[in-house]
Image (cartoon, helix red, strand yellow):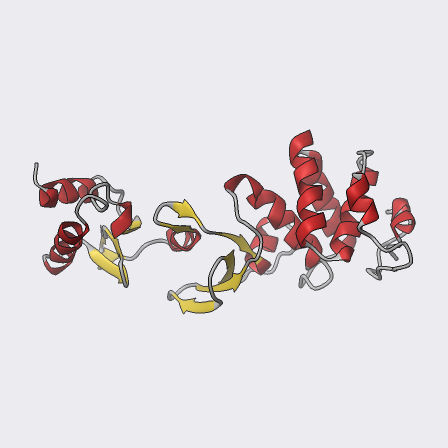
Length: 241
């Protein structure tokens, strides 16, 4: 089978609205020039649509003509590059999904490698922010919980005590290894306030707080978060007020 025919068959098998790049096609490494030429010819023939430079999709036909990819697919395409995870969703969009706020945002923040950018896609805007944390698929939920703790004071339309309780429940559902990994990520990559909050949540869950996390905190530093001390009696132990 020719490269051109193989590319066409692979593209035809893709679900409508799926965004893809050249490198996601199996024959790209073997014959990149032929793959690029075939894909561009398919665009010219109207068989697929160009989404952005080097990105394409098979359009779904609607009553008003070809339909663009869904917001969810656009977000997915920003999280993966050449089929590999390169970022994760954070910021207000995430905090609404976690139930920390009822405020909806059309701006989706993606933490990823590379540079900060803002891209408009009609119904949504995707802002990328630089992440200096190595991003692994298994760590994504943990990084999202830690990001929520980092921003807990400035999440709009939220109650800090309720937000903390929601994150506590999320952490309680993690496995022992995941809880230890969360503590390790907090120690290595997040500011002291987040580390103190992780210590507080571990204490509330009656989990053993890793010594390395405890020793990373300055015992003379106070973290002012305006928590309800009656709801969080363990907070004083970690100098959280």
